[in-house]
Amino acid sequence: MRMSFEEIAHTADVKIRARAPTLEALFSETFKALMQVMYGTHRAGGIQREIRIESSDNESLLADFLSEVLFLSEVERLVFSDARVTIDGLCLTAELTGEPFDPVRHSEGSEVKGISYSELAITHEANGYMLEIIFDV
Amino acid sequence: MLEGVNRIGMHEWEVPVGYVKGMRVPGRFFLSESLGKTLEPGAVQQLANVATLPGILKNSLAMPDIHWGYGFPIGGVAAFSVDEGIISPGGVGFDINCGVRLLATPLLHKDVSGRRDLIDELFRTVPTGVGAKSSLKVSSQVLEGMMVQGAQWAVKAGYGVEHDLVRCEEGGFMKTADKHAVSAKAKQRGIPQGGTLGSGNHFLEIQVVREIFNPVVAKAFGLSLGQVCCMIHCGSRGLGHQVCTDHLKILEGATRKYHITIPDRQLACAPITSPEGLAYFGAMASAANYAWANRQMITHATRQVLSKMFRIEYDQMPLIYDVAHNVAKMEEHVLDGKRMNVCVHRKGATRAFGPGSRDLPPDLASLGQPVIIPGSMGTSSFVLHGTQIAMDRTFGSTCHGAGRIMSRTQAKKHLSGREITANLLKEGIIVRAHSENAIADEAPGVYKPSDEVVNVVHEMGISRLVARLSPLGVIKG
Image (cartoon, rainbow over all chains, first blue to last red; front, top):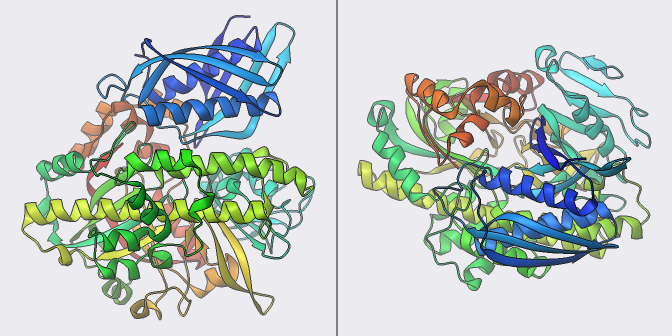
């Protein structure tokens, strides 16, 4: 299974469907979807940040990870381009790379207010993982 | 209309107990036949999910701008018994006290028609869009003032006049705020964003009063035909978003602790009087207060621009009213003839208190609360007044806006931001935004027609039309 994400129709908010061969890649794809929704496609690397999270199940781990990305991005005014995610049980480490927010290049998106648990489900299929998630915009 | 939903009145539909497992009361929503064509099954499911929550009173309700959200449907209203009921961030949303206010001016249509320089100056002055940063220095002391005393803090700090507070729900701040229940992370997000508008559907709009439906009430509210007004729509910014995120996590644990069964994780909740429930309520009230302070600071910036450009006095621009549309509040309501305190959740719904209710400005007490319903970009907004029927039927609530019918993905396929801006300009409406996508996302066609939505609440009598305003200029995130 190739890694991918797509935006699917949701009336009020942004709904993302992501697929990947591994759980780590699935988290990384969803992270990229979040950054694309917020800041568009022109995002570069350079500045490194690390996130460590522990949660009670995979869905919470993902929601907590993305919520932490929202927090970091906003308070440090950073736009991330990539994340290397490792998951050990219910502990996640993500090495993020990004750049300072640039109003000229990063104003094509919508502010994401929060990561919703509604309809959030990570499923394990024969050839990989799939999820759907709603971002409140 | 959807299968399993029963029509019980001209604009009234019931979702019977059993529609989803565990419903304690029926669901009820208000919608015209034609608006029903765009109703999503997901929204009805969410309305029914709310009916499963402990301590829910009477009905799980939704207003005619009902649509599919997360947790509660958008347009959802539910009241819970204080003794047996719950409080849930799923009934408030991430943008706590997202709300709208309307500011009067002494200007007439001809004074501002075609004045691009006014829209440009407002766009320069009020920070908008993703990554918007306040030009104001917000210290931790200031932040505390915003969280504890909301608009009252802002007025004391010079961002308004005393009269503004009389024209805000709750006098501009909830007295139950608990700053200690707000995390350091939420506070950190709140500091750089005081006085910023945000993005998405938030806007600042210069409007003109086009139609008066009720001259007596319009006059009492301070509205007259041809008058220019300013509408401000925004919320509690990152601070509120973080409060919701933090407390959802705490309440997930509480849901298990108190053995509450929920059909959607976003409905995580706790008994209102439990430590977790009280902590959320205190933090939510702090975020709500921050939002009131924020709208007050934006009001101040707007008054300064108008004052400078049109040589009008600051106090010639009174606030008509400020309403919250994502909030949970303790209110007194009459149920089965008994007066009782209940916790009303409004998620994309507006308080619409009727004549004689507490918390109304003394000069408007006999008329009912002003209700401000923003239209979508380019369409009419409305002012209504609250009614006794709303008190009797909807815990004093009405709709909050037009309600989306088209997703953002669909919207972008239809028209580009550039085309929409050009079309609006032909109608005399000037639009300024940081990106074309922001305009395409919020194009007029992605919303239900606002007049159809307000006609339903007017005909139902849960609020009554006072005036219609149309936009002349818009600034967006």
